[in-house]
Length: 95
Length: 510
Image (cartoon, rainbow over all chains, first blue to last red; front, side):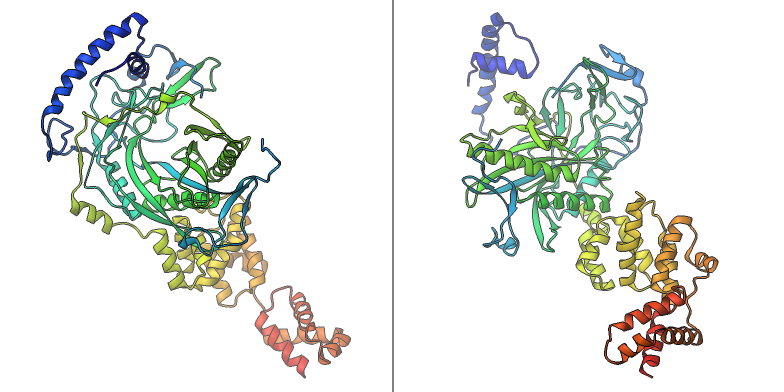
């Protein structure tokens, strides 16, 4: 598997990362290197083994339905680039 | 606009068998285009907010209408390093809902990340269940206006987080974000593409909402956004495989769901018939203009890049626990309707009306218990609903309580008042809030059951109308009603109808 320039630009756009034209070729090269390394894993025979999606083979612990958190808008908004009252403010998003 | 002057108004066919054996006796909903008849195919994704105190993965509160960003934890605001922990009650609610939809419960399910960029989604992904949902296939039965029923398949139900709320109309160039809703648990309930008309779409959402409310797993309040529907619509000629569908997002009332189906299907017929191709896309329903319009132009909007959330372990459910939940489910609308028909002798229609809302069913049973169940049903679906709608009241805040309405029926049952007077007493109860017995006493509405008084009144009427008496006796039977009316009038409406009839028959025969 190898990525072309268009795919690299698309991945960058989906991740909202700005990539300049001169960066595309080196990025493409680096990503293909990583993918090539990962593809070696495909050589391992995993037939009959259930996929493992987490590091621990155990069930998710559950929490009781009790309100134990929240009530601190000042802390939540502490890093907001802009605010009006207790709202975050972002450039207008229109559908 | 429509080309070629063809009629694109949806019509009901008056001839020929409808598609599918289940629907054989029902007239199919179709759209008549210039190239022929089109069938509408609809599947719905309903997002139902789970009733819980805290959010799906954090301990912040879920209450509606709180001050902005006051019910937000660092998990909900996606601060670095914060880890989600599953709320057990949300899992319980999802399983109870699945059981209420006669669906398979999956003992092992998993959470995935659905990646997309939006200002009210601080983490850049929604935690959802993609490959392994908690609930699998099920079904619900919907009732249609012509008295028939139809089974709509449920594909799946999965748990996911809600996003925050964007407010676009408070500033000319800015959008305000409130994360109170961010992280609240949703159940996404996906139907099979079994729906074939706006009516069926409406009936499906109505029935689903009724089941959720009975279960207490979602309040079903579409105005506050606790239930919203994405409507998937395609059209096809009879016998064809499915054509490309479009998704109409975030429709927030049952009426709009029905309108969106019709508007979108009509648009697609026009596209196909004018030589175009329907493109798979997300659209919005503009309720003001009654049309759908394209929402997202970027083709990568649907590239969600799902992958298992590494912060969350698989959700594993104990079979005994599932069985215990199943055993403790409340009586659901279908079962209640069947019981109302059987034990109260109600018509299927009246039973369906009375069980649609749990609170209405409880109100009815309070009134009907120990009384004539059919009379109770007639009063509730008649005068009571009329007063409730006229005054803009609800069953939770009724114009007359169940106990008070029962009191009125008792006065009719023991012949204290007659049915005509009861209607006046009912209106007085609505107006004054007093109970029936008090109003009857205050206004002197007690029924005249004294045979002497009724004899006297009847004799007076007969004496005053000798010509009519002669006509009646010569065979004009219809005049009987005239005499009843006159006698009742003479008794100020308070006469016992049975006694009046009896007395008139006796004295007219004389």
